[in-house]
Image (cartoon, rainbow, N blue to C red):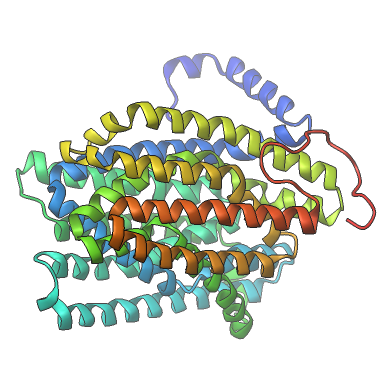
Length: 469
C-alpha cells in the first residue's frame, strides 16, 4: 500500500499499533497461532471470492445463457484434463520443497524444481494437442459452438498447469501472499476487465471461445508474475548447485496423490458439470456451474485456513498431544460452523436474488443451489477436516479407500439421477455422497485417532495422549 501524507506524519502511531498487535499474537496458544497464519490467506481469499463473483456476473451477462453454458462445459473438461496435465507435481512440491529446503539439500531442490517444470510443461502440451485432435475428429457430432470452445480450452490448459505449479512452489517456500495474489486477485481482475472492455467499451458480441481466450491471456500474465516471484525466492545456493534427480521417487509420490485427486475430481462439481453438459446440454451445465460456485461459499471458511493448520496437526500428533489436537479440531470446526451457517442462511433467503444478478434465467437454479449448499455445509463441518486428519497422521490408506469409494458411488448415482431427474438429481447424488463420505471419514478418525471431527468435541487443551492412543 502506498504511504499517504497522514502515514508519513504519524509513523510513531503506526509503529506502536503494529508492535501491540505483534505482542498480542506472540502470546501463544492455538487461536493466536491460527490468527497469525490465517491473516494473509483469509484476506486474499476474501478478495478473490469477491472478484470472482463480480467477474462471473459480468461474464454471464456478456455471454448470455447459451454461450456461458458452452464456456462452463469447456472449462469443466479442461479442469478434468488439468488433473493429469500437472501430474500432481504441484502437490508434490509442498512435500519435497519443504524437505529439501529445510535440510539444505540444494542439489535435490534444484533438480526437483527443474524436472517438475519440464514434466508439467511437456505433459500438459501433449494432452492439449491430443485433446485438440480428438475435438477435430468428433467436431461434426458436437453442438454448435462447443468445438471452438473446447479448442480454446486446450490452449488454456498448459498455461493453467504451469500457473498452478508455480503457485504451489511459492507456497512451499512459505510465500503465501506471492503464491495467492497473482492467481486469486490479479488473474480475475485482468479477466473481468478484458471481458468488460470487449463487451461494453468496444461493443463486441463476445462468445465462449473468445472469453476463454481472454481467460488464457490473464492466466499467462499471472504465470509471468509467479515466475518472477519464484526466481527471486529460490535461494542462491540452489541456483549455484548441480542438479540431482530422484525422478522415480517424485513420480511414485505423484502417482499416490493423483489417485486421490482423481477421486476428488469425480466427487467435485466439475465432473457434475461434465455429466450435465453431456446429458442435458450446455445451458443446463451453465446454470449448474453458477449454482455450484455460489454453494462453494459455504465451505469458504475452512478452505481459507485449513492448510495453515496442517503443520500444527502433524506436529501435535507426532508429540502425542491428543487433547490439544482435539482442541484444535474442535476450534476450527466451531468457527467454521458459524461462518458456513451464516452463508447457508443468506443463500436460503437471498439465493434467488443473487442468482438473478447473473441473468433472469439463472434464478431457476435455486433448488440446485440449496441442495449443493447443504452438501457443502456437511463437508465443511466434518468431512474436509476429517480427511486431512487421516492423511496427516499416517492413515492415508483408509482415507484413500473412502475417497475412491465415494467417487465411484457419486459418479454412478450422478449418471442415474441426472437421467431420471435432471440437474436436481445430479445435485442430490452429490449431496448424498458428501454426507456418507463425511460420516465414514469421521468414524475412522474416532476409531483410529480417538479424535472427533466436527463442532462437538472438547475445547480443553490437554498435554498428553492417553495410553495406547
